[in-house]
Length: 337
Ligand SMILES: Cc1cc2nc3c(=O)[nH]c(=O)nc-3n(C[C@H](O)[C@H](O)[C@H](O)COP(=O)(O)OP(=O)(O)OC[C@H]3O[C@@H](n4cnc5c(N)ncnc54)[C@H](O)[C@@H]3O)c2cc1C
Image (tube, rainbow, N blue to C red; front, side, top):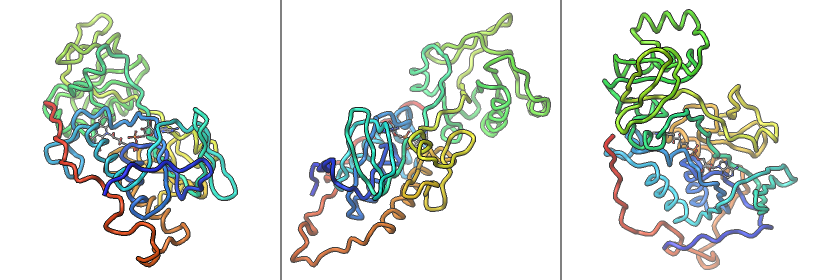
């Protein structure tokens, strides 16, 4: 049976508030809803996964899956088990006696014993005319671990701070022998890095003056030398961890602001968990989903027991429990890459 999830009232003490509805937050919601816990997901609607044209390394999708299709399926699964999702941005998170108090930018309030932060990162994007179309077509790619296989044997450029770009270019040699570095600025490279790039036949170009997608390739213009066209461009500009709510509570983080967690996904703030890209770890869907399974199970095990009543007195019993509608599986979206 599938029902529309009920949004708990402001004064309800939730077992867990999940902030963020990307792969991490939605998986945590599915687990906790299936543990019969009282939860709520709050989401600002900008999952990184929405940028994915087609993911080919997401477990269980041999023909690939579009990022938005994956998000829809994860959402259907969570809401199908009764997890309510509210569209809002949590602006403040504070400790209180029995847990946490969260306030959204539009003035909504929630109280929860535990919080799972699944807020991700925001990529720093390059100034590149036609960027959105280039990402859609796989001409600009943001995650070599995810999709360098699809760029195998292409002419690849890495754009960013020179030392990071050389490091990334060395990684990309697994996929192509035609790898170039386009520095973001004229800052000199570390001598050892530069030598390693030269030894590996990586071409280091002058800093880019401008970049534009021409419908097929990225064209990079330089000062005084002819432009270059690249079938694939990987920016290495990093991203900004969306961890401000945890930083404000004093949670430990690494030099990039990403949260440090233990083997249960607990941050250094008691009751506050972190999963997915916001954690100091590999930024991948499979990792976010794994983090979420671990965090949700730990939250469940730390909460007071919620033993079922006997069938005669339990308000809602099988087979009338919520479960995702038995709707036909939506078709997968196949892009050319
Ligand atoms: C172009 C591209 C291609 C990629 N391809 C792949 C791939 O093929 N395979 C792979 O494994 N990974 C891929 N990734 C990486 C993958 O998208 C991320 O690892 C994954 O989305 C991380 O999930 P998450 O749940 O941690 O964060 P996200 O998916 O980013 O979700 C975070 C959510 O939290 C919300 N949020 C943030 N702050 C707040 C707040 N204060 N209040 C409420 N909500 C908030 C955001 O709006 C967002 O909806 C790709 C990424 C990009 C950009």
